[in-house]
Length: 322
Image 1 (cartoon, rainbow, N blue to C red):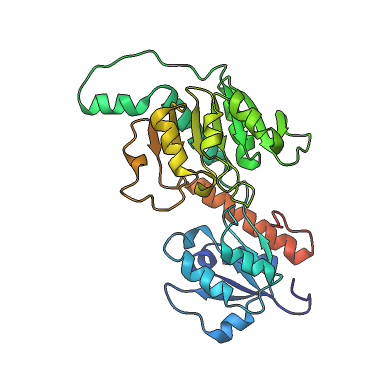
Image 2 (image 1 turned 180 degrees about the vertical axis):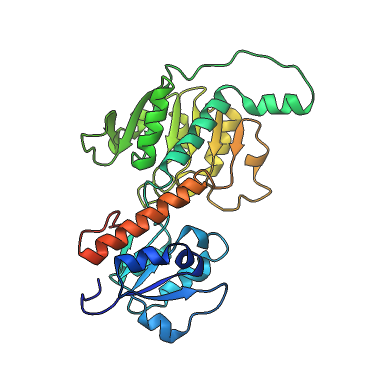
């Protein structure tokens, strides 16, 4: 972090500064700012001055690449704050290798993503895709459907999102069990360690993936994993697309054992128009926006401002990525 005698220079968007710049100055009146104004290029002289960079929700999607590209060219950057949770981008790894402190907004989208997960599970259990097709054809096509009450919910990657998925699943009468590398003991539900991954697959009626992309999780859902899942199980992925072998997923949806899937993330995004996933009748696809609400953005901004306050008074930052 910057020396207490040296004013920090913040890099942010013009929109963020217009909205909350007064709050930033109230926390640190000595702060200097370099703003990304529209699509303008930042001069190298300004890039050399920047010590802090905040990539905020308003930068996504139109200016995100420009903003991160400029941040990478800041030789004196000490701290980079993200407005989202995912940190698997090679750009972020490069900054961390340079000694830049990286913090994210983990938890900002947890409520909204978990609600989207419940939307998938409710829609899949009631075969909403079939009902939508029947409605489009003006066909009256009733049928019995399974209840989520009493179903077993396996959550792979038990962080802020996973905890909210468990809470909502429990409210619907489901029985959640989470999977994480190191249980803390305060999760409030039963937690299994990662070495019981295969046990969880065979136990659950629904698997929800909220895990980040790491060397350990890449392609963890391969053909063997899907074969271990229960006949008629549902699969939901709101983590990262590369956690799943898409060819194996397609086979599991077309030929069993999966009854259906709710997918928000994909190995290639946007999902190519020729992907078979678009055509499968038991798949619900959303365009990587399961947490995109105005409340998520507001929570992310509050996390950023709170971390700036902590930085200014010398308190430990939250959500430091290691």
